Length: 161
Image (tube, rainbow, N blue to C red; front, top):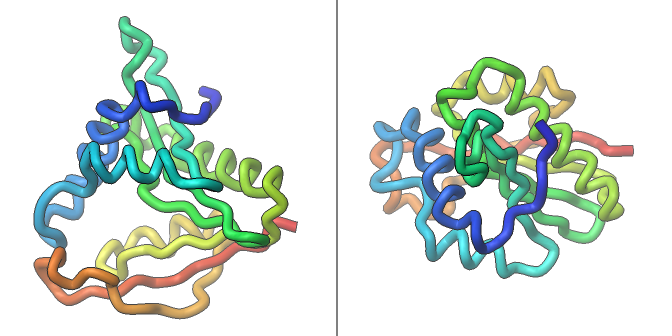
């Protein structure tokens, strides 16, 4: 499964796979994880992209198995919304997508890759640590009105050089 850069034709599928993958956070946040308006906004940002993996089992060829948002900020890359359709989880697709993000950011001249993870998702720091990320600090969640419970973000980074 080779990731490709998403296009505006992928908006509905991006919303579907992201919201489906983030159902695990339903007790932490109000509402859906993303919307068509947010995905369209992010697709239009300079130095940003969604990388997606098409579902090889889909008959129409336009169903997504995974997606991730990535942006470059000078010598730093950032990614978020790593999403794997639950039907495809547990097969290493998440790791493969993170490796694709690393390659994308290296190609853009980034020397470090950043991610923020919700502290209540206790499995995530270990997942990213196994991929070479280390915690660098924490920060408040930027929009506490969206949360159902108190939480903060764990900041992690990985050198790309």
